Amino acid sequence: MTNMVEVHVVGLIMDPVSKSPVMILEPLHEKKIIPIWIGLFEANAIALELEKVISPRPLTHDLMKSIMTHLDAHIDKVVITDLVENTYYAEIYLEREKETCIIDCRPSDAVAIALKNKARIFVTEQVMEASIVTDILSNLIQGEERLDTWFESLSPEDFGKYEQ
Image (cartoon, rainbow, N blue to C red; front, side, top):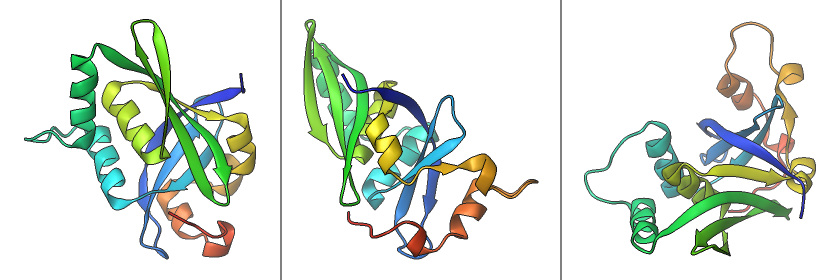
């Protein structure tokens, strides 16, 4: 099995150039970040979970959680598995009756589902090495500047081409 690093969602910011949301992941035991550009709908689902906002009607990820509950299944973990040509790939590890089913998905959906189901989020070592991993301590200006201020100061060339 590939070595994995557990991460958590630091937050969401808007890329001022592309006007796309960026999901910021951080390893639990390192001061680095992994920015992943995502779609608006997925960013909204993640933001609702991070802010613990309950929708009056079930949204897509709520529906998926409800279906899993009714089928007596649960999410063991999600893993961001690969980065190919600036596109990230992920898998959901769904368990039911002691059997694990691995489901291919987009990282934004994987993270939204993980947050909804309180499941752990991992990134493979391969993704850690291949992605735009930035050492927060060496790149943030000392003082009280926030991560989003630093992130907005970066240019598009710092990230390469983005494909959604």
